[in-house]
Length: 124
Image (cartoon, rainbow, N blue to C red; front, side):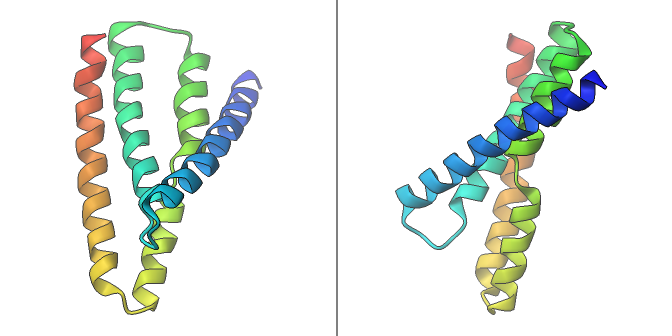
């Protein structure tokens, strides 16, 4: 039951941060391209790489803390479902080039960010 509460609270925190950051990035770029989602997914991948490596390989912590940070906060923060929907909407609008760029850039960047995060996690 504790882990359920931990995920619930963390997810709310992550979702609130995502909402704020998405709006901030979109206002900053002034673009219709979903840069906010891209930044959030990339940052979330970097953070999960750092956290999982740090918390599992370098510092053994209470499993509830790991669950709070990764499944809770990062689960609420990252937006893969939003990414998928925005990509489908681009395809429905015949913006195939932008849909392909969004998929390619997001997948490559998120995989690279997760990898870099695991390297950073080993340093801590």
